[in-house]
Amino acid sequence: CWRVEDYVVVQECARCSSFQAKSMTECEPTGFVEKITCATSKRDDFKRCRSAVMEAQVFWRFVGTMMSVTAVFAVLVVCRQRVLDRKALEKVRKQIESI
Image 1: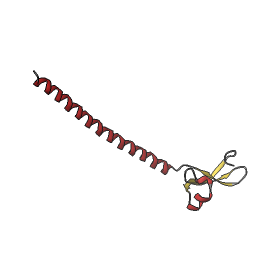
Image 2: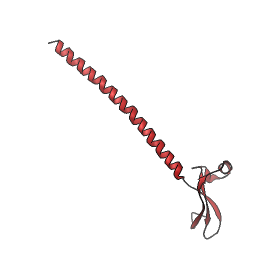
Image 3: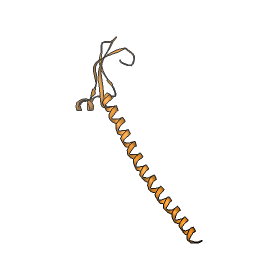
Image 4: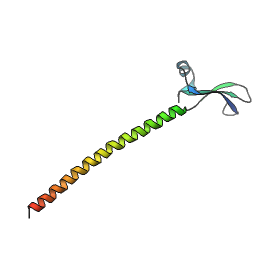
């Protein structure tokens, strides 16, 4: 009913219980539901929702992963630069010795 009618949120977005997770299809995608009452039909229903806490955890996990990947690649760049510098110095040294 919530797709075609106005509704009032009776219970805010909360994690599904283990029973709800097994019995309600609304729990499957996100694991969170909110209880609503449709205005016209006065019918109680559940609607899937996204928890702000869950979204924050996903965001910070993403940020942490990206920072870790950045750190790994920064170390690889520094190591590669040192190898290239060493090769360049060796080449210059050999040219100087050959004179």
